[in-house]
Image (cartoon, rainbow, N blue to C red; front, side):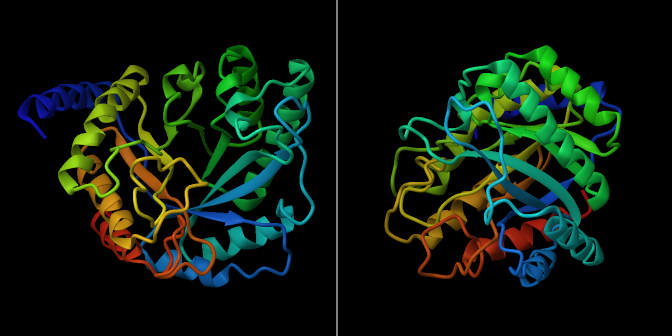
Length: 333
C-alpha cells in the first residue's frame, strides 16, 4: 500500500476514535448454516468452531418468499430449522463458550429468472410485505431472547427495502422493546451506503464479497491493491455514523479465480485451496489494524469440505488453519 493511502486511513481512524467512546467487542465469528432436519447433529461443527478460537457462531436460518413479487415470508418444511433445534444449538454453543448470532436470511423458492434474488424484491403489495416481514423479525427477536443470543441481524442484503426508512425504524423500535441484545443489518457489499436506517443500529454489518481482481491467478500484491478500492469508502461509512464495522459474511470458494467474483455461488472452477487461503490471509492483513473494524464472520462451516471440495466450506482446508491462527492473534482485541 502507498503512503498516501495509509495517511488517509490514519486521519479517518483518528476521527473515528475521537467520536466513539468505546467500540463493540471483536467478533471472531463463523457462519454455520442450519437446515430443517431435526435429526441433524451440529455438535461436531460447534466443537470445531470452538477449536478455531472463535468467539461467535452465526446461525444462518433460511426462510423463503415464493418469488421476487411475493408478499409473504414463509418457513420451508425440511429447510427452515425449527425453533427447538435453534434453541438446542444455542445452548450447546453457550456451553462451549461461543456467543450466538442469529442471521435469518430470505431466499426465493421459485425465482422466475436468475436475476431474481433478495436484493431486488418487488412485492405486489409493500404494506402486506412489511406486515409479514415485521412478524417474521419479531418471531426471531423472541427466539433470540430464548437463545440468549448476543446479536440479531434484522435483515440481509434487502437492497430495495432500504429506502423505507420509517418502516425500518418502527421495526427496530418494536424489536428493541422486547430484545436487549445487539442489533445489526447485513448490507450487500455494493449497496451499504444506501442503508438509510444505519444510525439506528449498534454496529454496521456488510456482506463482504468484494471483487478484488479480474486475474484468475492473483498474487498477494494484486489482492492487497484490490482492497484499496473499497476499504477507504467503507471506513468513511463507519466514520459517518460513528459505528463499528463487522463483515457479517465473508468468504471465498476454494476454486481458481475465487477473488474475481466471490459473490457468485454458481461458479464452478477447478479446486484451488491456495487461492482461498491467500484471500483470507490478505483480508486479515489489510483489515486487522483499521480502528473501526471489529471483526468478521467467515463463510462457512457446514458439510464435509476437504481438499477436493471447490465450495465456500472451510472445513479441512488450509484456509481454516489460517483462520484459527488469526482468531488466536485477535483474541484479546
